[in-house]
Length: 434
Image (cartoon, rainbow, N blue to C red; front, side, top):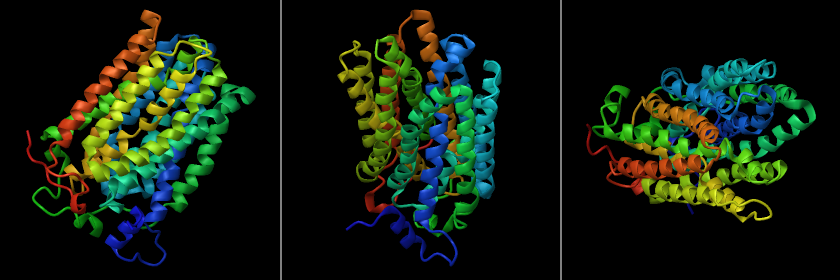
């Protein structure tokens, strides 16, 4: 019987010293941190309708606050990765928790979209960046060298669970307390959960400074210690950056506007929120499942399968005719939900295998700049196209196009590994550089 990822990592690293947390605790803390941080970040589409009514600035300008949030999160990714490579998570993660909670609290006092852009668009984004996918991927890639896809996918499944739980909670808070009161309540939740997780429960052994024994086991060879400067001269890094850019254009041009699109089609607001809330739950399953499948069948092949399902989901949503026909919404929820976020674990693991060594955090952070740009552009594009054309069909068509292009680029990046990651438990070096 195959051992669980955390047990494999424990065997590879040897017995931990007394008083130190093991890989299982590290994985649990990462899962919980990602659940709360991204669950809170992705509440913006739930606030969207209330914010449109409050400020009356149109769909494009209101969605631009979320675009700024994504842009800031992506823009600081290389710095976050560099900090992780140099000093580890012990200081960075608590700072992120404070920024996130403080930004949500200030959002409650926003007088206009400019205030909201400063609080949610910048402060909350900085907080999510400091506790989010880049530091957690850097940490888990070191702790689980032989089952990265499964381990990162398991931790990233927390994102889907957070969205699933916090989206309906946010809607209930808005109904009971208004949108301002909801922001205050969510700020309290962030402080109460994230500060203990990042300050007291993060294991003392959860450091990524230096290669470590687990890294040495897979980092042998001529390409065993990449630097960011060296990685920037290779084609796969730019392929992956473009994949991370195109994917969220497709995903967030849809998700940011999915609720209001369904309402425009005639479905009830509560019905739309309830159905689309399932996307978060399914994404938890998908992140782990596709991460584990990529360990076995290869990163690129698994990623292409996920993009095909995403495309089917978007097409189903575009076909939704309105009530009482609900099957297109359920088809969208199933296919899109299972693949929402599925590429994160795949690309995180692929990056670790292409660029082995001490600078993984900085390299993955640079790739994540593409994600930030795409996540910034996607929500704004969806709203701007609607404002011009009066329909979301063109925006969703653009989402399909960007998804197909991302799949092609991921295939190009994956071709630079001579063997699937799971072959003998080690990764192959890059075949060529620019």
